[in-house]
Length: 166
Length: 119
Image (cartoon, rainbow over all chains, first blue to last red; front, top):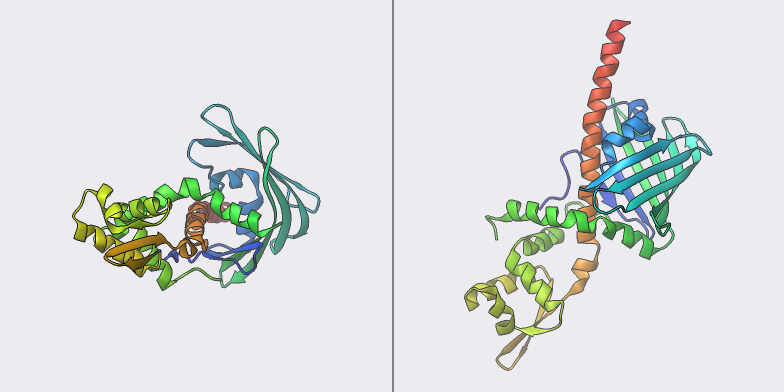
C-alpha cells in the first residue's frame, strides 16, 4: 500500500525524540497561518476523536501568548486539556509553542515543543511541523496515542483496499 | 527515517490486511505455537492456514523453526515495533486534520475573493 497521500503528507522521525510532518497547502502563507492559529478556524480542523467535542479553543500567536484547548467526552465526563505558550513568533513564517496535554484529573499525559515553519512554494505553502518530546518513550507514546482510534479504521480501509489481493 | 513508499511496509500491511492473519498474530503474541495449534481456531483447512502463515513469514512478521516434523512459529516483533503501524494511524489522524484544513483554506480563499470584489 502506498502510504503517501495525494496531497503529500510526509512523516519522519529524524531523531529519537522528534516527529516531523510536512505538507503543502494550496493557499498563501498568510491564510495557512490564520487557519492554524485563529480559534474559530482551529475548531474546523482540530478534529476531536469520535465522541468528543471541543469545548474551549483559545490561541494567541504572539510571544508569551497562550494556547488552550479543551475537549469533553459524550460518555461519562472525562475532560482533556491542552495548554501551551508561544515562545517564538515570526508572523507568517514560523512559530514555536509548548504544549502539555492533561486529563481532567490533572494528570499530565505528555508534553512537547511544537515548531511550525511556513515557506512559499509558488502560490502554495509548504508547512513543516517539528514536534520535540522529552524522551524517546514520550515520542513513541505520542505516536501510539492515536493508535486506538486510528487502528480499527485503518484495518477496515486496508481490508477494503487489499481484499482482492489477500 | 522517512516512512513513505516503503516496500517492506507494503508487505507488512498486506500481511495484516486479512483477519485470519491478524488472528495468527494475536495467538503468537502469547508465545511460540506449532502449525496445527495455529490452524485449529481458524476454521479453515490446514493448507489454507499454512498459506496465511507463509504470507506473514514473507513480511518477516513471524519466523518458522522446524523440529523433526513439527513447524514452530514465533512472532518477530521488530517490524511491528518499528513504529510503522503507529505511524500509519498517526498519519491518518493528521491526514484527516489536514484534509479539513484544505477545505477550510478553499473557503477562506473564496471569502477573500468575494471581499475583494465588493471593495
